[in-house]
Length: 295
Image (tube, rainbow, N blue to C red; front, side, top):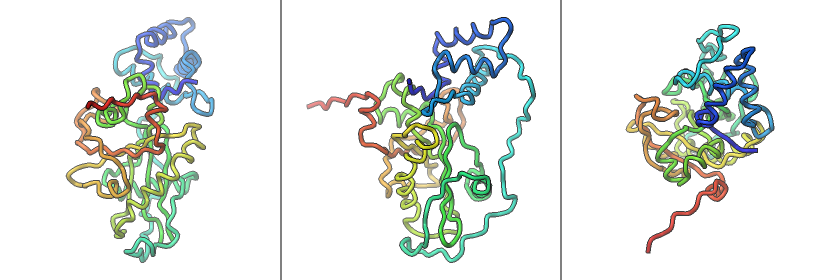
């Protein structure tokens, strides 16, 4: 099975644009759902568990419609555009008597968010206490709460990697075809919160290390795909990325302020780009040839 990570990129290819337009010209006309099903079947768009990637394909079809590639049939029902995440609707209880020495924090652990109550807690933390005040993730998602005997210390969230990221892509050394095929092996850690009132040196870098040990297996169990690389962004000059550096993440450059979808979006802030390899031979697995060293 081909591991096509960016369905949008695949559908943008000339041959596949012609395929979608031909399917849209069928009589009787296909519904949006039937179109997505047929595109998945024709292009073998499956996840690691062998399930059709219907949600991602449907989203890509809508986004490419917005870019003028085709016109989709009218939806059967109008879904409200508003997004209402599940919340506690009250602040998460503050952690109590958190030690200022890392080794003295009792029961420090990552808890995968897998039930509605933990999701409400995670959302409430991000909306109230994360600087972005946003809890929405993109694509395949994985969330953790940072638990302890003292209460909730924060949370982490992963989503799909940025489609175009010059610093990351140059550092990896892959070509556009390799990036398209293996981008799903990259996870974007786009939410990382240590609660503002928790003051403990080295806690953030320790949590990053815990996460690096957990995320590969958890993501594979959930989605059937083993990630090879983590990426994250640090907004400067507000933050210096010290916890990433202490956890051996690698700074590979800066963003261009275009957002995760690349040149079609602009106006975002400039951020430092950090990556962390989960497997040492990810370049070999992606077929990236080493750069020859000049004498």
